[in-house]
Length: 138
Image (cartoon, rainbow, N blue to C red; front, side, top):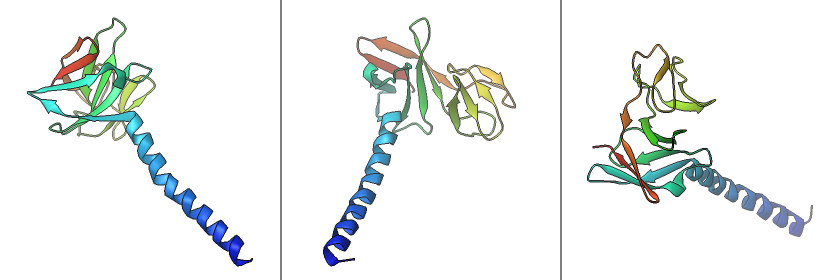
């Protein structure tokens, strides 16, 4: 291999590796919004909702992520993504929130579907005002 070909191949490989962390961080931004809480209220633009009408939100001052979902009647719910059974993280699977640790399942509005959890998820009131959502967390 001549020097020119070696340098070109090496530069192409470095450029490709440099793009990977950027793509991964952009993917993370698309699924989770980080917002601030002011006077006990988390304010979020409706535009932050995904096409399915939901958003996963992280806010300074909250220990767990929230899932905000639009209900069929047009109202909204906000629940902590933390299983009350053993504090395991929840993931959205097939229109439900499921704990991978022990299998508890919840509706998107936090109602318990299947244990071992004995209670539903911690929820917060949500109000829609124009193009903004306001979640009272404190």
